[in-house]
Length: 401
Image (cartoon, rainbow, N blue to C red):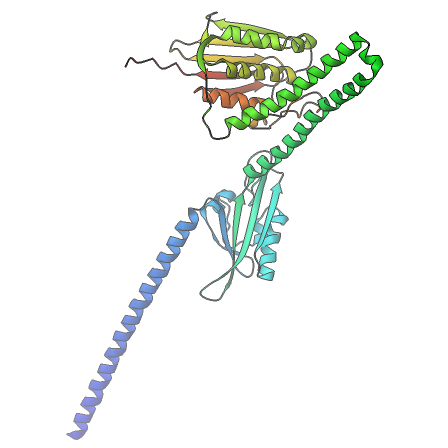
């Protein structure tokens, strides 16, 4: 009896132990499953957060293979596989992988600016024409499983790089534009100190006229710089709006450029519909707009025989269209998207001595047009026709109080 009782106790104890083990196993499985779900949720949140980044983001293991790529990185490859590929395979240019490999090797953060002159992104897909600039930022990361990871951020800095480039170009252009007339003025001043020259009124007057012309050139450069600085200072432009004749405004421009058009045997045609078309705006700025556009056409087309048309049209809805067109050599299609940027100069088909200026004129034009609530567009067929078209909305009707 005692034996049976002992056996029963052993069996009961074994069953209890087995039941406890089953309970613990089930509890462990639940905990493990919950842990997996939490890890999965954390990874999903991480992926969503990194996918929201505007910059490309990669994680690379100790063998330099990619273990994670966010949406921006995937967009740079346009469907090509990134996961599992090595950095050397993924990057288009060897210079791009240098910073990453150095970071993996030394365990220290690395950053590199790389300028690509081809129309491809760092990861090989087609990008913007004319090249691009990228910052490759790599740094080591510690992970929960002690595996060595490196995070890579690929940032597109093309706009900043181009802005810095055009600033440098502007300084060079402005220095040249200022140095030349200053040298001429100083040269004539030295001659005027000579008593023999002073006593010759004809020669003295000739020297003074030349000095005045180049002094005006310096004043124009300074004026352009002040105007564009004021326009881009963030302050609203103060417009002295009045109704004025567009033809009379254009005639002022024709008279100011008469010497230039005569020298180049160019012709400026005014075509207004109706002939007494009036515009409400700041006449000073509208004179600047038309002057800059017509002068730009003359500068870009020094060959004789150029025809420039200034056409104004009043539409049925009371909106106004102003087009300045010329039949010159045109603007290269690659330059068209950028011509209204500050300091940008279309001079790839000219020598530096042929085209004077700093690249501020068209930027001033765009800002002045936008200040009047209008917009300006440029179209060009090289060797045939170039048009700058300004669209002005109807003037709001005055309401009585």
